[in-house]
Length: 257
Image (cartoon, rainbow, N blue to C red; front, side, top):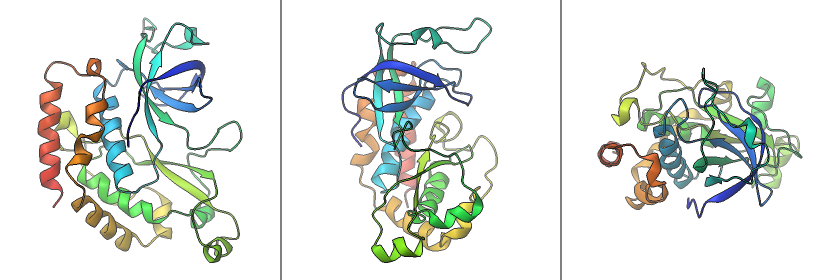
């Protein structure tokens, strides 16, 4: 997944939930992004994790949002909303930040954080669940795995579409800031719960899809480990971070097998 050149933020829509204090923004091309800003309360390593893990998930063929480096300039409408909720309400600085593109236009299609349990059977890409489960074990994901869901035509056959009552949702794996464990040691911040946290897992063949995910992870080429890393803004790295990330990626490659 190539991040491409930075995209200018044109307007701020609203603040999002979560400890990283992200915002929904719009860019000059009309796209919407959930933006995690540099120097947020969770630190810049979360932004780096998003870039690296998002690229790896995409390489595994999992439905995951497109990523971008976003630029905050002085022409952004709603700029006054951009501050971190600390005692001093620290303003968010101009510069380069991380964006996760909304997979559908939120003004036209509803995006859900979860679905009523009966609707999980209508998720068109259920096989992704086991692949993501295997991925999260591999990268020591230390938070609850999140998906978002939206109605969207999906590449399923006419027979499958009919079986799903003509209606399907797509699930996108999001929020990878807590991948790679504590301090990039690939050790979890807390003991893993070795089961998927979503009811959706009971609607897929978890053993089969997790096995497929394991095989896909084992076959990832070395180039995918560096693809997003090379495009991460240098100002996101604190002293020693680049060496620590190199070491972590080397261990991650060893863990493939």
